[in-house]
Image 1 (cartoon, helix red, strand yellow):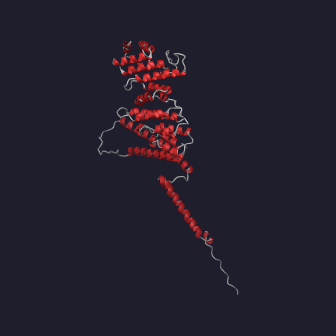
Image 2 (cartoon, rainbow, N blue to C red):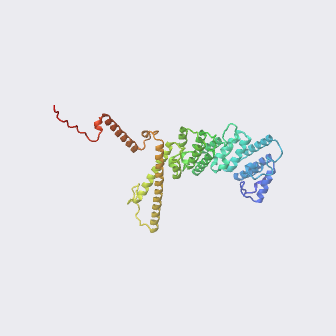
Image 3 (tube, one colour):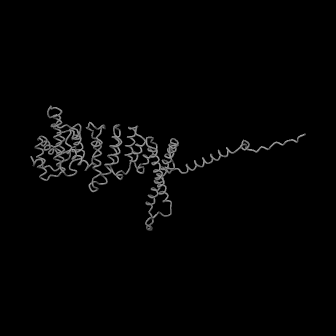
Length: 421
């Protein structure tokens, strides 16, 4: 039997088509009991079989006994624990717990030997049947190694704890992401960090719909990764906006703390325009978005203005090689300049719309800002102060004037006629 299991070299993970011979020896392995299967896997490991092949054998065997681990809801194995015998629910759950603990014990120690989605399904079953904490910790460690390969569907593990009020096990995901972030730089690549950041943003957008999700858990998961993990903060902004929609009772101070997760410089023009019109965001965050867009516009103007100069800037102080440009290069450069001008016009129109929205917000929140503290709109402040000084002078002069002085033209005193007496 050992030779029969060790012969195939082209086996694949569950979900991919396999040759009929591989299916036959896989099914033969599924007929065996658990103890014999463990001995078989030990013999295969001793023969030096590749870890990914051993992992595929374990994953296929587990999907036959527990269809929940196959990732296909319609697939049910003939030897599944649910239909093996009409036993009580308690006995069935005890068998599942023993089955999961045994599988975790025989997993290959090498990384990427087991698919991440299979480990997530195994962890979901382990939490459901209540395996020992040491086995759960081992699975969480393995999942964190390859969290960038996880899918959102498999990561949305429900919470089986009676003390947790949320539908999803958010604390579990926080532990997985923090463990992934604590890995050495050599073990995780930059692409993996970007993938995990997108996965976290998508998970936050789904978990934010739960009204029982606390602000602390949301912030802990959103800030679990470093700032350089996200090239754009549009996904995080969408998750925050979803959370504010579902939690309308969040205080103003908590909204400010929540918006600190967003870097306004990493928002796209569409997200910035939406944020400028979003009444759920605090005014300080809206103003920060507007100023970031204004600075982007200024950079675009400076960049496009450099093409109009006689010479492009040369920071190194080196003269560029003099060469006559071909007609194709000149056409390409003209097309690039044309695209930049179109982009500049589009950004300018968006900035005008943002400024109009800012004026509306200022009218709405008039009297609640301390412009001196914010350090913005000095022209408005100076004009207001000048207007106040003029009003004070007019009031002071009005108090010193007599009713005769108020008249526009001076009134000449009447000429008295000489008395006859």
